[in-house]
Length: 435
Image 1 (tube, rainbow, N blue to C red):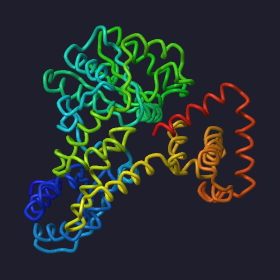
Image 2: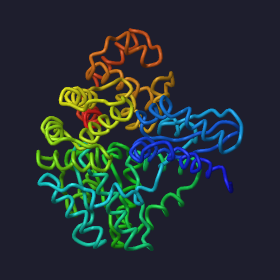
Image 3: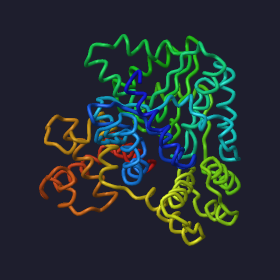
Image 4: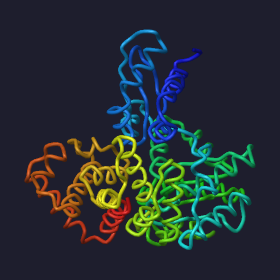
């Protein structure tokens, strides 16, 4: 083989001989090669659920394939989720170019009354890259298709205008890149990446709110692109007027073009989504099963897709599984409950993202002002949103004692009397509850 990266392709080719197309698409479609280091094959799989299935069900088959390729040897397999991969490689890795992914095109976007305007505006942008729809600001709750529309715009423009420089970034990653650029003295390279784009798409722009230097940088980037007639597309979980910590000059610019919202899909749209997802995954669903899912899973598309994926897992992992209403009812309850529950780790993650620090920093003992404040806010929100006992909060936060937790919560409660600080807490809380 010409390179170690070709090994994974050879492994997949051998697996395809034994597994169904559905199994390959379900469990290995987003699993990518990282490196082959001595007798260790390292892979990256964004989905923790799929990673666990690969390790629990297909591990021996992968090892057998490696042994067949190399003729001998006992290999170890490491499969990293996104967070683990970030630690492993030192940077966030996107598994595939989303604009090359056929799952995220306009043709695969199910249009209904709740998203019709957003879909039409996105299509207009993909065909006319400046003018009335600049900037295009799409907002709505999680799992409703905002990111799908960004990918679809990129897919269409990449196909029709190969010379176009398309830049896609998430709001929190924009901050992280800026921090890294400042630390490494690469400010010019950072600015050139964004200010010479023909199309800039920022997902979850709400995460730059409250970050003074990030907002300053994005303000000048926005102005440069807008004045040059370049297209800007932004998504958020809320409209600009509800971003309490967003600078007014940015808020007004976000409202210059077209603001469109996406609402949860109605029953007919949900039913069409369920059928489409089931068809694409090779899952035969009887009409009454599809109707039950559409009637009971109502909040977002991500829940609908998760339900169909879990049904597929039952079919793949449990021989002759009976896909009936009782099973689907249990699955839908698990999906909905899991999507609504908050965990300490989730809260710590969102607080860390807001302050552009790591979760380990929050759980540590650093007394740096921002880190200490973030730690106190995390304790306060864990108590408020989960009502966890103080001793348990201390354990989650790296072994803090009861009195430290109590002092932190009281300090945040007192600080909430200041309107600006109360806005910060509301912003972070919105980031958590709109997960």
